[in-house]
Amino acid sequence: MPQAPNGPGLLIHAAGPLEPNTLAGILRNSANARAAVTPGTAIEVVVQGPGVRLLAADSPVGDAITHRQHLNVKILACANSLRSTGLDTKELTAGINTVPAAVAHLAERQWQGWAYVRP
Image (cartoon, one colour):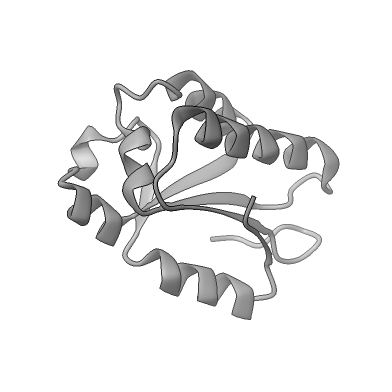
């Protein structure tokens, strides 16, 4: 992933069982961050645990997911969590990517100097 002109990006971690309102709030946080950080700063929301179910194409927060993608906020699902919940990548909302293991992705981003937020 290319780095922002001003350096590493912002990683927002959504973990555990999530209610739709909780994930919607986390996605609002990402929109607020997009409006406040230096233009070009990379922002990722990584969803881990049973909350990945809310990333399915029929999600009650589908509009919020799509809106964040238009703001150039990457939404990533943990592949291990998808497997644990029985959700296939083909069932995800269009535009959502995966990382093999959220915990490893979080560590790598922190080693790269990214800011880490867990709302």
